[in-house]
Image (cartoon, rainbow, N blue to C red):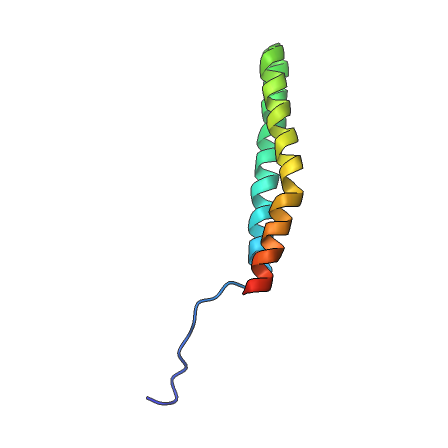
Length: 75
């Protein structure tokens, strides 16, 4: 039994960055689809809300990237 390797679960260094990127891309895509849907429905308020969601996601990117890099350094 001494030859059996004990596996440890640990995250790869790129996983956090990939998770953050996927989340931000998903929010931006959904905001873009929301803007397109709001334009099709001719609703200016919906366009503004969808644009704010997309803008928030874009502004959120540097902070999430910094957090993911900080977590990678501590691993």
